[in-house]
Length: 152
Image (cartoon, rainbow, N blue to C red; front, side):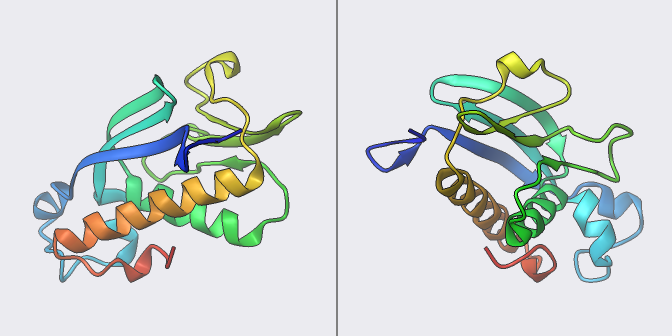
């Protein structure tokens, strides 16, 4: 459950990472404070379960999500996760909740029946670490030191 031939069935994918609003704010990657970088670093985010797209959002604050997911993972107290973004009025654009069969990932913008299949904790933790690592590598590729996000 959770993996096929070592590959995760459930994963986040982010593409086209950028920080286009920095220039509008009169900032550069060097001068922007971490709080601004968290919300201004965006990418097209897709939550995938096997062949099925569970949820997607263009220009999503992936650095902010990666930071919060990593902090949640490191606390590992068994509580659910609801993304509380500075960019969204509503909490829960990304949610991770415990279910009878494991952990399910989804969004308050989608009905729970459309969320991912249940994952065991180990598979969920691996998925989160892979996502945080991908975001950190993409942030580094655009010239920003990713230490403000978290070490995966």
